[in-house]
Image (cartoon, rainbow, N blue to C red):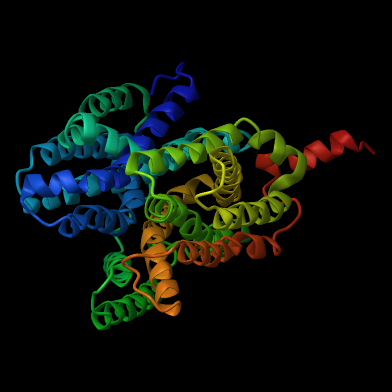
Length: 475
């Protein structure tokens, strides 16, 4: 990397790559009907394109840290961008559902390396005291992509063609690849160790099985016996992955050593429940707006832009708020505020003024953005540079898995609520959405309870909280 190049350039590059990767996970949702006609297949069958992408991410993300250590972060990040961009071209040129699914798997392999290795590059080049700003800067594009993906996909599909959803990645990917080769230093570790294959295989099956089973359970009209069996086997496989990890604690893909740190374990346990919860709302709200409110797909998608505005607005305040109150207090108070703002979404009805809907979604977007940034930043505050790769690889896999399960958990919850109220989930009622949102909101309390065990000055080196208190109350 050019030593005179500002770290902001590299961070911006990583943030753009995050946006591109996350956008492709959701943007095809509104394009499925047109794609189904193009492939001469059923709309429901097109879900395999989204599922295949998520499954590939879940399986290959754990490899990213090991590959970056062995071959260098620039080499792997550049390769990931190249694979992702080339696969985007092939996705746009696909003429059958089988071709498209295979290309989505290839695209998922590139995406699986791109996000965690990109974050690792930022973590390695950013001082601890500037970590909050860097994490905030690279986090919001990913959150934004999850929100604007569906309406953007609908716009492109309506006024152009679904092929352009993928072709638009080409100039962005080529530019990102060139800038990566110019700006990013090819850092690698001196220590070499073989890949932990047993843990990789067990964890890969556990992740794949969990996502697949939850997707099937969330569908309407399917048999439940097979997905429940697969889910049980996934839990067993996950247990075996932990057992094999304990046999090689120093080199395992599961970072058991970092999990002993409360600051890191919170981002794995309590934060996972939070990620699942907030990932549900961008799925349930458009359905509620269309089915219960009678809005069209494009209008319902536009409402979600208020979430994006809230996400973006909070980035300007996160550093000052952290410096004033510290991680523990923010995670608790802001976490409760996030849950309350989510619960307010269960009060919306067709008679609610649009400005009120926008305001509630904006506030929720701001609170969830603050919580995301704090949880992610706190995870790395006590991790030493030599352990950063393993810690980042494992946490990236956990983050992707929990975010990927959001839609499935939302669908399952809505289905169970509808059946409990005595009617089919094929046509959910407004009350079904309200109850489902309230149930999901309780999951967002995960980091609140987990944060009660944090030290008041947890992550103070990064947040500057302790220093701010001394300046305010000098001895």
